[in-house]
Amino acid sequence: MILTPYCLGSGKASEAIQKSLAWIPILNPGLTLAPTRQLRRNEALPSVKGIDTPILFIANPHGLHARAILEGARSGFQAIVTEKPAAVSPDEIRELKAVSIPVAVLHGYRCLWGLQTIRKMLDAGELGELITLEGRYWQSSAAKRALERSASGKPRDSWKNDPRLSGGFDTFLDLGTHWADTAAWLMNETRFTGTTWLSFQNAEAPHRDTHVQTVLHFSGDRRAFGSISKTAHGSGNALEWNVIGTRASASWSFSNPDEIILGRGNTKTVIVRQENHLGSRQAAFHGVGWLEGYLEIIQSIVREVSAGTVQASASTDYPRLSHNLEVLESWFKTLST
Image (cartoon, rainbow, N blue to C red; front, side, top):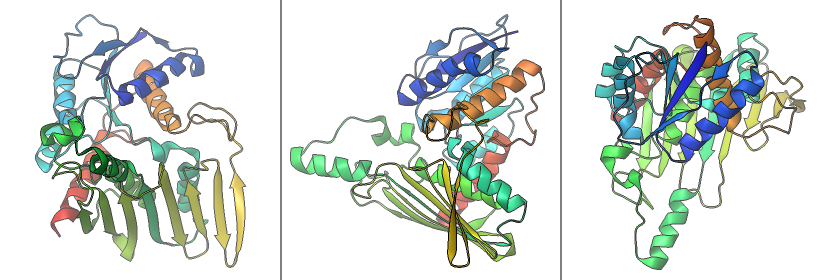
């Protein structure tokens, strides 16, 4: 069997997907992939009749993702892998619930070793009863651009300044959906309530929120608190999670992805990754950054398609559309409470 990837979009996300696809035959010698067929942002999907196992990879602007998923399902693709967010409105969420082919969403952070290990600790009861999650995801892109505009007096050209392409939000949909997906996954629930506040300070366009604070409520009076920003000056890609249980706490940071700090009482222990079965399968401290998550998700669905075992509702440990839509539905509702 030859799997034929089609990639819709040509920006940085498309490059990341194609880099990941290049690794797949190396990591999985039994899999054969045809050369990737590149499609432009607004290009109509081609007929895939007679194509051996076509898979669609979606990397166009946020506001076009849902339409591409629906068109891909109608066009005969056997599976779809989409950049986040899968949808940018409650109406799109409702439409996507009718999709029956398997769709993976590239929420790659929770497929990294650190968060995977913390989830296993939670499932095994090693941290005791989960009390709360506190996560921070800070970047500085909006702050940087605000200073540049102040100096030049000119806004830059960006598809994110067009709400038809960006989906009418920025940080809330971009970094925020990563954060909400991970919080729900660590809680092992896709439904939650809560309150989310948006700031538009330093915004490049009126609809582009730059800072998000959120409190989510899960069953058993468990909560998750998030600070999510694109206007935190001096930040790189600062993603951190602190998981607080009754018996122990665990902390993980993307800046140091192969270590977990485990606290018990007033002592702490550093756990270093020993295994190399996820993502690129390289040794600890020799990974490929956030591409590790892309690799894990893409090779998981490619292996399943190749084996003929994929089911749209299958319970797996990477983000599937059916589960992600429930998270997105809850995430949007936090804006109205």
